[in-house]
Image: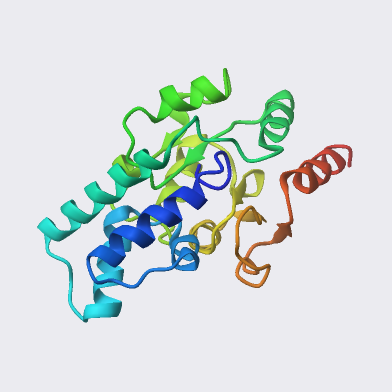
Length: 214
């Protein structure tokens, strides 16, 4: 979702960096991008282990995540823009008759409403895997394995579209083909575990269109 559907990562990076700093945890925009896909709890616990050498308490996790979420929403002056070109990709995939799934670490209970408002008639409730559906988030393969299992398709019929290293690891560990689109500040090397890496959604769309004619 973040970084594939919505151009929300710059605001997430600002919010994480500021709130972590307030709690004595150095955290950069790059840290935010490379941790994308983790649940908020996982991001906080890893930062505590890395910086302080201990696990965060449940209270610390709850407090920091609440502060980060509140600050993120303060930064939202307008509707979050979509990733350039993603609408064309989604429309093409739908026209081809393929299933479209969302596999996200988000725990937003209003997620489907938000998606339907921005991408009408694309997403369905029964084709979403969120933080509420898994015990282990990305980079664990569980999120993508759940989506694949519910799809009823063979693994070779599925393609994961990702923009983050942990999401790529999750998809590959699930035994799925993964295409990465570099929509943020990461390098191609950061995304090199993907089967293919594209610089933008227009490149991905051109590849999908060409592949559909073969």
